[in-house]
Image 1: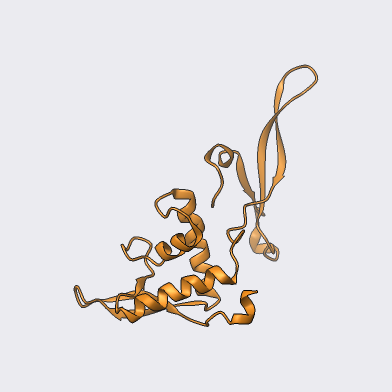
Image 2: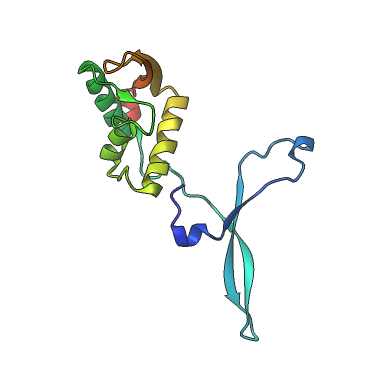
Length: 154
């Protein structure tokens, strides 16, 4: 989820033990254990609030539009990006190129996946099945959904 490995080891999510008896939480609650030295020089674990990084930090409508342009270009060349993260032509590679991220890096890949999933959920990008030229089977590909309007890019 884009958290440094050293920090991630001490992070945990707080959930209700009997979630079926209560309404679902609006947002996941995370905490982090840190070591604190007390007056007698012993170290104790302390639970502190932790906010997960926002995968959309630094991402605006301009970046989305650049990704949409790349997706549309791939479609025009009859080589649409794939929805599957394992595909060589995964749409996440376009997102990585626009955002200056490395799709091979685990933390970056997680962030890219969350961004792609959100854009698909908001119909900025759309998944449709297309027949593969290689083997004739149906594969999920990514196309532009609702285009970003010029006034949204300010």
